Length: 214
Length: 214
Image (cartoon, rainbow over all chains, first blue to last red; front, side, top):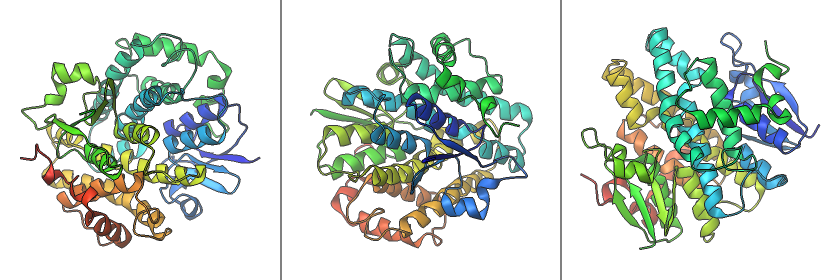
């Protein structure tokens, strides 16, 4: 198969790419790279030689490979433009990218596995402190996301069709639920999540539906 | 002036946008939003109503406004395409964006002011633990960045002309030096920094050359 996604079922960033691939109707092969402590396949030599960033996701499309979920989404949009996951005007595109970046830059990097392991392993924070940290950054980011999404009508974040924004939001919602972060303050985000998760492109991308889910 | 940049002199993310604006030869007005503890102008109502994310930078171009540095860079590239800060092929564009995202998503969000304040204020980490945290995420990210940049020739990260990658790297190098992170392991990054910082577009964007530098 031409497109290969190096992925871990629980990776929030890989989940974004699965959604973009599914929304574009692109077939792909999932290659599992376990981030589980004790396995850490992303830090082993063969993966490292492929992706020196030693993170998932990493996409291969034929001979070409690229890491970083936002870069992958942009690559897919340029290479497989239909259906579009960005609007047509520069202003609307910027709004979608800003929403997406607020999740990819200002929520998720603070809460991903390597950071939680550092907090507990190096800084000896308690489970409660870790969970408070986690919820804090979700709240900070979702508060703004709720305002932005509420200013738009339609079943998706930015209206009638799915965009990068939904591909970034839905994995972060999943992640928030996994850590039992209350979502009562974000009714618009919850409604978008419900709408999205009823669709097969989103169902197929769920972590528990991945081949390497344990 | 048509373009306004809401900015804080020490913000690494605002610095990226100043570089992109300068590299494109766009004039802009800087509007200071102090992130300094005690001032926190980014959390005050008038800024919040402009940018619910309550972060800098925020760019206004006439009536249109957008936050998040990567979204702003993409907006500038689409709206003011010359000189280009992205290459022409989808593959090369993806490589530049991946490099940029590795800094914007996997280094800087862990080390910005709000996170350092949380570590000290909420988790009672010592100055030494904070600095170790800081250096750790720089090292993790720069190690991969050095490999990627070394695989390319030319004075800039990706060859003969400046790109998003340089606009993201140079502020992060500045930031690393500010926190006295040793850079001996990253000779290619240091050489790129030296080349860039000899140029007026980069000089003008330096934090100490901003009107709100105190």
